[in-house]
Image (cartoon, rainbow, N blue to C red; front, side, top):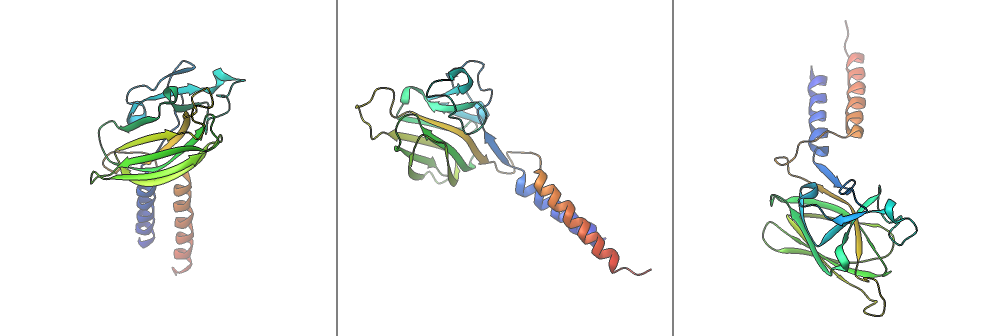
Length: 205
């Protein structure tokens, strides 16, 4: 009996610990090669963003640039200030985002997140041509990004354009219901089996 209760508690922990992670990979956001980001895509509202399918850009600087899959987001026309927020204004934990630059090998991004108190988190980063994961752990309902390029006006072709992929966030339990991860369930099963075996060894008939 105690073993069953223990296993139940482990399963509950696994469900709570893994239930609310979401990843926006922008896959299938448009049926075109590129488009303005759809309104409320992935549960977020978008300002100044487009989405692109790199399959349609083989042989160009837009090919082989996603973090995963074929689609990624970008700031339209290299807009220097863009933003996105939760569609229902709920606060979530922003875990991580992947960023890369279109042209500048040291593009500056000032990333700001609005907290529950109304204050703003801020983080300044530099990104190059390869996708890089940036980790936050911010409780926010809105993100604003301001891009500045070291190339200035010396180069043609939107030097402040950046690419973005795999936006990962965790919703509060009240906002999300999802499946437990397979690794967590396997861990629970293994511990329960070991616990059951140990229990049988100590029971004498």
